[in-house]
Image (tube, rainbow, N blue to C red; front, side):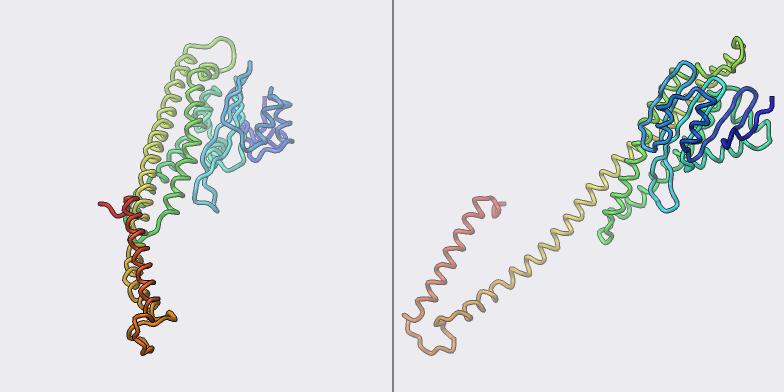
Length: 335
């Protein structure tokens, strides 16, 4: 039977008994078209239309519904953000739904659309489990590329952190945010992939039709190995991000310490400069008072006329002694 490449506006690809439906920028109309042909729950339709669902797996009798997050970098941004991928995996079909910003997945689908039977077989295989692996594998490879690019920026930040002439608090904070964003993507991805490998791969690794043949069992074992390989890549990315998170925290503390030391040096210089100006300030203050001071324009040198000056000097000395005593009590003047 001839199967069209478009089902009422939806792009589809078929290889033997396996069908791949790919939806970019889903609308409610598109989702209802899919729901008429495939056993999709209405709640899952709402999840596909939303962009901020948590990663999860919903299991049904004849299919599973998966939500995964993968990083994307938009043209107007340099930092990665996450994009939601929704998948319906059935016995002889697989539906992928995203907002059109997962370029590796879109390129994989377009490559599979080419009229090349060999290329189509290599990507889709004969089971939905094999196609699921192909999709996840290409997205994890892109995740690995983005992660290594972000982690590679640590070397540049390291050189700037120990350079006192460069203010790099913003760069350190931006890199911390990027690493945190990637960890928020990879941690649940690792959990979901582990569940898929242990519980769902065998369920969708046999081609539809009658009893499983011997070669189907071989494919089942191969799929588990393939998913284990993907899990290994995800684990390596997570380990690298954990190490990078610790490193960037060290850089943050180092930058804070060096900035504080630089600020203390500036404050120390200003304090010394102000301290050196105190004698001149005090002397000028005395001569600016409306009292008799020796050497002033007032020629009357009677000792009684200088009582005000002596009283001010005594009060100043007393206040200085009290301050020194109090500072020593607080431990500010001890070694």
